[in-house]
Length: 122
Image (cartoon, rainbow, N blue to C red; front, top):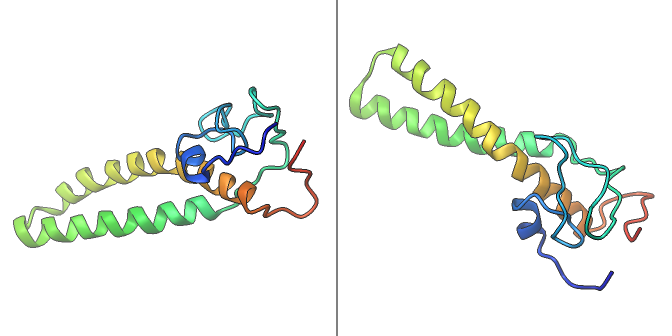
């Protein structure tokens, strides 16, 4: 494999291999595959931990609460409108953001070699 620099942001947000940027990272919705089809990088020990969920909760929470406050101040809708509007938006937003955030943190870990005893070149 050549030493071509793959941006962790490009690879992560596209949910691609952190080494080559070509192969798929996921086998399922949030299940990391066994390895890269393109360059052969083994994903066996890839672990993003709870970081992606924390970032998504904080970012999405700030956006949803801000929008809910704007709606409340400007329109003063009944409480059921807030429940019907912000509940599904929160769930959909979390599902949309969690996959690329997890891939981004995996790509950043790979780029910064944030592992203990893993051979990243295999």
